Image (tube, rainbow, N blue to C red; front, side, top):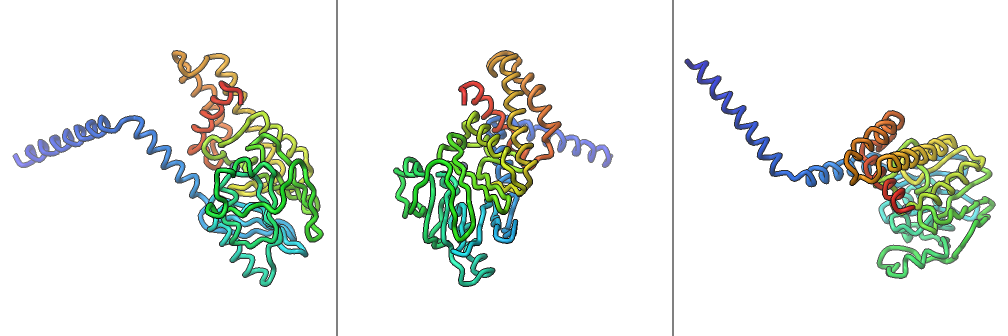
Length: 317
Ligand SMILES: [Zn+2]
């Protein structure tokens, strides 16, 4: 008798749980679930590289990484050259690192790779004697109050490919044209055979959030130009460093993705066409997953990346 009652109770509890589950699913709009999932994924993506590191790439070339961001630091007889300071926390961490490792040596020049605010804040922490960047930075910053926003103003504007010699070290600043903004410089150090490609290249990683501010034709042209340069060490501004082959592989990934999207779009039309979505999944997502599914951030960022590529095919950018 007791067993039968227990069974009935268990059955009731199961029914109750199922009913609650159905109510919960009904209460959760699909948009809410998808948004929460994306935000959780984004959090995983951006917080993957916790902590900080200071890596020597050659006798006088270093890369400082803190959290999601990574820069380039050159030690010259005139002082340090820092390319990108990102934000006050990053710049303070780098300043502490330099003080500890090289007491008494100061920052001679800070170079901004491009105008995006996530790369240029907090420069005062490094107290550079000079600040160099593209002449069109002001076009984007005219609505800002630089002091209030923590951005050191330029002491020298440059435009086009520019060679600098600071303290005996040669830097080639390569104007990347309209690629990721129209204010972007990559930095090539011929003696050290190092290339810094901020927001241009990644090493076996997906770019964040569909790669904001990418003009695809210019972006590909910029990467193709960089891929022809003779260098060994490849330094992106996010995630790990790599070799020249990693830059070429990333370029291949971009081109393959765009080609798959274009082909599916030409064959099945825009997403509004009946049945197009299923074709997109089979003909774009699955082949990319098979080839690049083990890349850092693939699961978290493939969706916005594909959406961005569809927009690019549809709108022509
Ligand atoms: Zn950027």
